[in-house]
Length: 113
Length: 112
Image: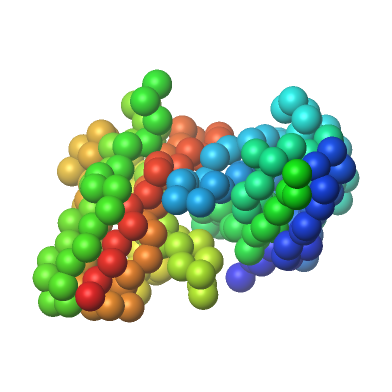
């Protein structure tokens, strides 16, 4: 089945630093979504991408839909302590049964004040 | 909008008991998904519905698990009988067409 490789698995950074994480796949996706999950809560949608090459920002967050449609990255600029959490990428494929999202395993972000 | 609503937020039960988790999707959304999240296995899709009809239940672990969606604003996930290995956080999510998918806050289930 379709799989997403998300990296890195974890990151430890200082407050103020920029962060970059990415997801890759051997399959083509029509949609890429990025979520953040805080402890004890459900994943919260950060950014949705629908077109190859699309670059979208949401405050300090920027995400891009790769030209090949097989990858996406998420950047966080000037990190702050509340950025701590687990970030998940999710893709929606173009094949039959692609109504369901495929999730990466997550990037755990720790921000040291 | 109130977002996806799940109840209860926490459930502690003894092995062998029946557990029912509830979900109210966002109004107007035609897709509803049930997921289970554990440290070991991450986020797993259990079942999803489109227009109240179950489309794919291949992720349901065993016959002990069942899900229903009697109308567009309500779904249940039932485990009978429950076992300790069912302990996890269960999420409901909803979506309109192929647009953004939104998750509920989850139900943390502990089976002792």
